Length: 387
Image 1 (cartoon, rainbow, N blue to C red):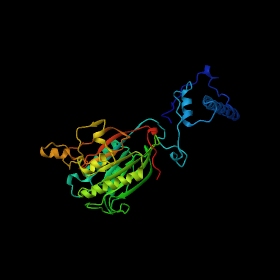
Image 2 (image 1 turned 180 degrees about the vertical axis):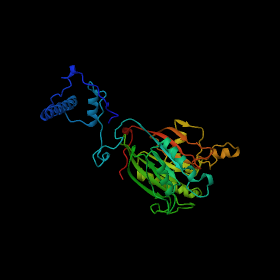
Image 3 (image 1 turned 180 degrees about the horizontal axis):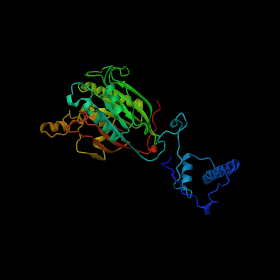
Image 4 (image 1 turned 90 degrees about the vertical axis):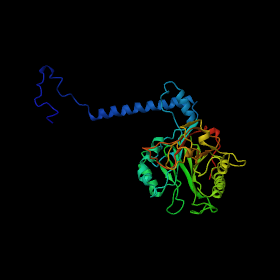
């Protein structure tokens, strides 16, 4: 205490004796009276504000949106918080609103990424998962997609990736077979609310887990999710897959099955179909999804983007990166095998094939690809099909 108060305080000035004498203290009842009075005045003020807003609407019941518009138009209310609608499913158990529930009637953009992680095998040497996992997490954190589909991830690999991400994501999806790879979907729960999800297998028995179809070299499957945008309450679907790298019939039959299931699950609602399709643009698989008569007539993000970031269009590089080494360059230019498909009702603002490396080392043998997609206003979209 000696460090705070003077050791030898200065003597009092006798001329200020009365000012330094103890003043009479207010009684407890006086203090309570003042406190109650202050509260009453404050409550009357709040009541007046509410009355003024309702009076502007003619004193009749109104929607949240009408109240917000009328309140904002009153003098002095320009900087007051806007009223906003909150649905029951946007409240927590404690009655508090979840983040990002403000509704918007304007177009809304969303970042979508597909990323073949390359499974965490033992034969990749310096390209093994332990050397590149931090780079993978860093790319995701910096680009921060709202939705990301991953391919080839193993159970422990995906759990490790989730733990490394600085921004929290939720994820779902099952392994395609016992101890196998996953086609998982990561999503930002602050932006999207997951409403439903499921899986099916690209085989003659699509609802039987682990079934291998047609001439495929591996078991192939699809993970899908149904979401609601918190900002606009629009619903959308995401489908994530990896087609077979060997069986042409498997890719053909699998694509047909995939489209049949998308129609049954998503109906007319907006959706994204993403993943590693293991085939080039100038093939029957690509034309089936984009241009074949009677086919889905989808669009692909890279060629349709208003702006393409960077000058690399291929996504598979086999650890070679962007080296221009003559004959192989033309082959790599065709290796755009990771696709993001979408319906024409949406617009792609930008698409980027992310080609960065660290001292010649790459995060995967595939480049991730990200698209920023603009949704129309909610009034321009058909409602999602109820499942």
